[in-house]
Amino acid sequence: MSETDDPGRTKRLVKTSRHLSLVLRHNPGSIGVTLDPAGWVDVSVLLAALAAHGRRLSRAELDEVVAENDKQRFAFDDSGTRIRASQGHSVDVDLGYTDSEPPARLFHGTHPGALDQIRREGLRPMNRHEVHLSPDPETATRVGARRGRPVVLTVDAARMAADGHRFRVSANGVWLTDAVPPEYLSH
Image (cartoon, rainbow, N blue to C red):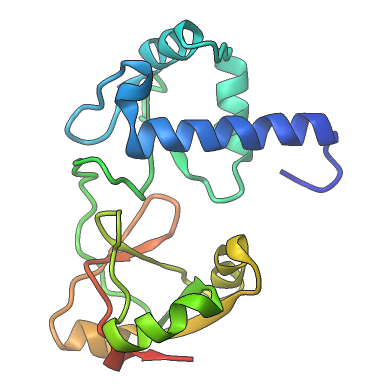
């Protein structure tokens, strides 16, 4: 969503994206839908459920939200008839991502208030299934800035992989791992 967009349109897209994140990542039951084991829901079912809960959204608007989301949080299946969140679920789904060899370094954006706990415990998934890592410091900076002044941590992903830690990469380029112990982190 670029800065040249109409502010009302941008605000609507962001609000809709946030609501879709809630539904498709954390609480599909809030609108009465059920995700399949891989996190998919039929677009027609999603749109009908949103409308029934006061959030009318056309297919064209849904397409726009998916296409314009700066983090590419959502994906349609090959047929375009089903949608899911690309990662970040707190509900039980198997996205089917296979193990991948990570780049030597990955990055994690956070806020200063989390640093002491991260230094003690490393990165944990918290209320999600996996820890999310960025492929570059710029992306991690944007992620960390959601809660104020960002702090970017560097993850020694090559050493983690050599030590047997598994990595997967989501459809939108976010790297996923079960946890990052503190010895693999630097600031």
